[in-house]
Length: 106
Image 1 (tube, one colour):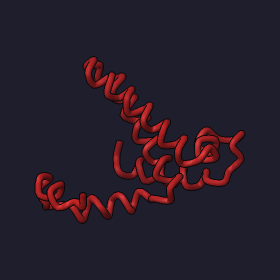
Image 2 (cartoon, rainbow, N blue to C red):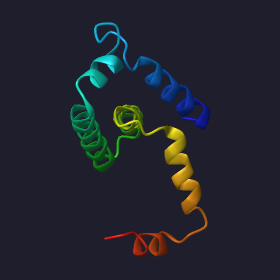
Image 3 (spheres, helix red, strand yellow):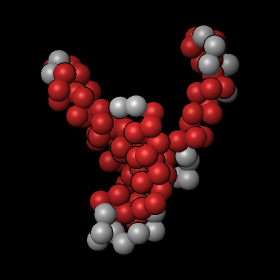
Image 4 (tube, helix red, strand yellow):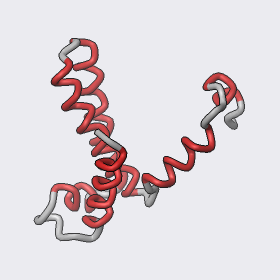
């Protein structure tokens, strides 16, 4: 999935905020609140982990797409944009993962 596809998906999710929950799965999830969105993200992440351990590339790809979608929904539920996440990634760019992790507040 290209960055453009993620940006379009994030924009679609943002557009569904406040929409009629009967008209959209995204609106229905968002209407249930951030906690439910987080729970659904966790379920999808577990499904992706299961497929990763099984080694089925096609199923893992499908589950990974579900994880990305539900991650974006969870972020939207807490008013965190894809741009916010990209900015954080850019801030970390060029820093060793070990160094970055060691510098995080406890």
